[in-house]
Length: 189
Image (tube, rainbow, N blue to C red; front, top):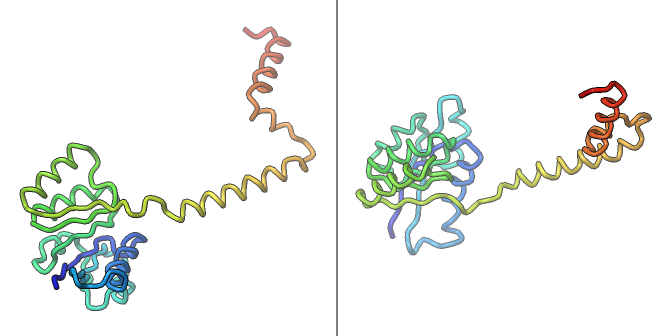
């Protein structure tokens, strides 16, 4: 059995937590006959509490600088769950260090950057993957529901208002008609 030693970067963020949990639970779903993964490092900046991370992956080191994880000879795979603007820089450093890379989307900001990373990966014999397994965030559904509820409440409240003078502004035809009538009354040109 082979083992891949993983460093999860951005471990205290929502996606970092999801990845950390996935590495620890996938043997229950897929077995270990083809190999397994073990989190050896959780990486988060100094502003986050390391204590909160320690229980997420028992035995993993808590590191505050992603450069240390990239340089660590005990790390095989760099899992990038950092803010998007850091993905290219971190992926490039990891690939140049000979690490495999799993990165949340987007891997890079341009096609040229992505091509450069692909070239480095080929030259180093590294495997790269971009996380497209979760294209829709449940939080987006929650936001949509909240907006729909607020719209419904607003729509129900409008007819009960004693004066609806503001409503005509949202209807273009009425707005244009009122504007031209006002101009005609004052001889606007």
